[in-house]
Image (cartoon, rainbow, N blue to C red; front, side, top):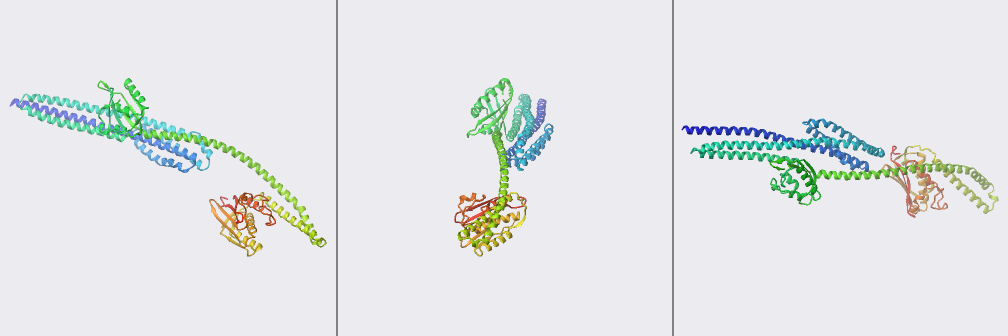
Length: 626
């Protein structure tokens, strides 16, 4: 009994030591697990901060891209990237501020980043306002000054510093994860060794007794259960690591000096491999087959140098997926001695989208630069042409003034002798007509008719010349009343009851009453005169709005004219019909053109020979436009 009691005490002591060891191992395991989870959360936080910095930088680039497109094309649709990015930028900065609250280094730099972004968006907005105001040269000079580029470069540099800090911290955290995992393994190994030793002593003691065999079986059952529980916990931690990698879109790998390669599920997902094979050692040839042929030498040289000199490496490489597409990857690794074998334990990140965006941005910048150069050259040519046109305009204005002065002088000087001809011819007709024979009276009639025609022509020339020196005194004029009264009086005097008038509502206009009355008088006179041969003459007056102008028209069903003469009608003395058939001076339409032009409008005609004619002229629709 004493022997049994002693054995029982030893068994109890063994169980007590085993329980104490389990408690101690569980304590250290719990602490290590808590530190591991905390480190994983920090890894996720650092990765989110890196991605958020990239998002802020990308939005800032989008604002500049939209601004450049708008400055070059002046089309509002090119501002869509600018408006979208500007609307999201402040929200993303708030997210970034929340992410940096727990990091003093980043929190201290965030205000400067905000100031730089505010200055950049302010600069871009100023450029857009100049373009919208039509100050294209000022906008071009502002862009050419390089302020926007300097601000964007400063933002890139600051974001790069903040990302570098987070990347270094991320690398440190990953090493901590690795350290915690090794510590867990060591704690588990030590606990397992000590536990096995204790159970071995207990088993040795029990073997010496007949009853020890049964006890050993119970101990073995307990041992297996404990090992199964530990294995399940380790698997749970490994699943957490894989989940963190999937969230961060970063895969990890292990490559030893013997060429054996092991990757996590996220790494297999990035490479497009069978996920069922993840975690199983395989030959490095799987990597060689996936790499783009042009990148294989570069990557393997970097790996060989890292093994040989025990230094970290970083490469950007392309891979060919089984479906034929390509991806851009950023791979980083660090050599680590595991036992007696050297291992590259690194990470791989998919940067395809970022690379594609950078290439598109580079191509767009090159295109914008080319367009900018072409625009600068075109602006120089336009400036030279503008100066030449200004010179021609000045010369033409001077010549027109000289011509008007000459025309006025000549016309005025001709009136005096012409009055004498008309006066003496009239006396001759009244007092001596009976003393002349029939031929003499015929010649006298021709002289007086020609003199009166010349008098009308000189008056028309004087009126045309005075238009160049007459100020336009504008007021609100009721065109309905003006035109209806004038047309009724003209048709009643010239062809009573023979002309049908169709006058649409004309409204009011901001014009010189006397001058615009002359325009309507000349156009209506022509319509009545050239439709005189029609048994049912019809004159139509109408108007309609076209943009910022009001278009007025006078149409008749008279003789018309050939369409190719439409551009010659408005010159001085330009006539398409003989004076015998259609009397006139040939100056009326030239007067109309000058008056309409002085009002800020234009005049033109449309016709087909024998099918009547329509004359159009425009006036600004409102006083501000006028």
